[in-house]
Image 1 (cartoon, helix red, strand yellow):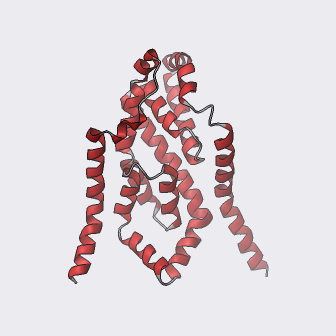
Image 2: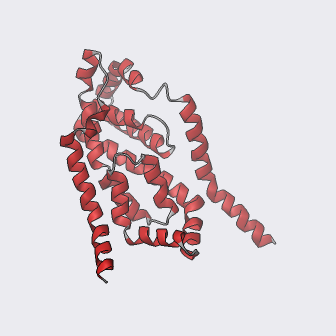
Image 3: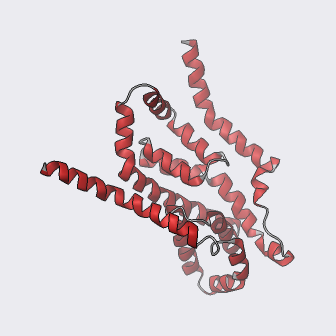
Length: 242
């Protein structure tokens, strides 16, 4: 009986970080939406630039810390944060700051989900039969491709691509590598949009966030998606031949 209680208590403690993330995400979605916005960036642009010029390193560290918190707690404003990285630091090194911060934040929520639910869920899926087991086996056989596809396809929400790998037992190192490399194309595109915000502010306009769907940008990304999906296709063809 004591062992059962201890196990149950340990399970609750493991879920605590994930519960905290969900609670903060819910509160943030209600309270921060009006603050983490394009209008806030526009209204405070001169103060941000002045602080950056006087305290560059502190601005970099503070910006990355805020970005990590936004991603780790799935708060609204990740796109605005990416634009801000470009606005403050140009396309480079702004893209590097954005991608590193996003990867760290994604890793934190991945670890919370993996420790809270993922390890047990993955074990149950592995021990199950039928469609659930086939789904788990299919993901395991093509982890690299599936992870890259989730990062490259613009339609997959970022927080979804953080949680699903944790729930199916993806190794930490594989998650970090595919996250960092997979978000580079989109990260560079949105950072470059942010780098041009000065002119957008002067014209009194809003940035075109649909630029990622322009053919000259979308087609190369889709090409990367096809390349990531190629190993899956080859495995299917080999199974049919057998």
